[in-house]
Image 1 (spheres, rainbow, N blue to C red):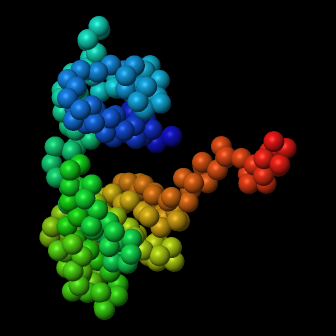
Image 2 (cartoon, rainbow, N blue to C red):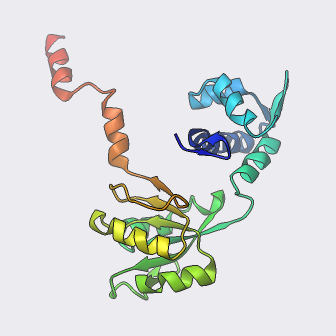
Image 3 (cartoon, helix red, strand yellow):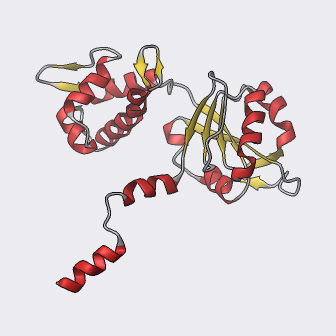
Length: 219
């Protein structure tokens, strides 16, 4: 279990989930909530929610719960979301194109600001207003623009080599969409987004097709 500043990484990972639920509550017009209400919405015990939040201070009051806007402000500050983070997309293929056009980033504190690719034929093309740059420009651009975060949308075979380039360029946070674990120094954060892994997780809870057919035949 990774621990930063004495706080387990698994706790940090739940904070954006709380942030999303609170944002939805605020948008619905609610001003206060409780750990019990959040727990019902998220499938997390109220005790776990209170314990997670207690790592960062006391945000609620006995009997009245949490003021939603106040807790939102506190979570944004904890997660360093009081500023807009500019992000580089690495890979201008289908996935990179989709990421560049996804509208859900900007409302949550992230702006896709650069796209890099190794293919010279892609260089100069536009993706949602962003001009694709060659990967050779990454290091210089990263240092000039203080790029700290990148989305890695490259083939599996290129993932480690491109990750090495990102690390060399000073990138400190990488969201990897390639279905492979990459090696990075201890001061670089890597997270993975692999829908196949998520679906394989869910199939554990499903009945195999043959079992379903056997059940139907008996009915």
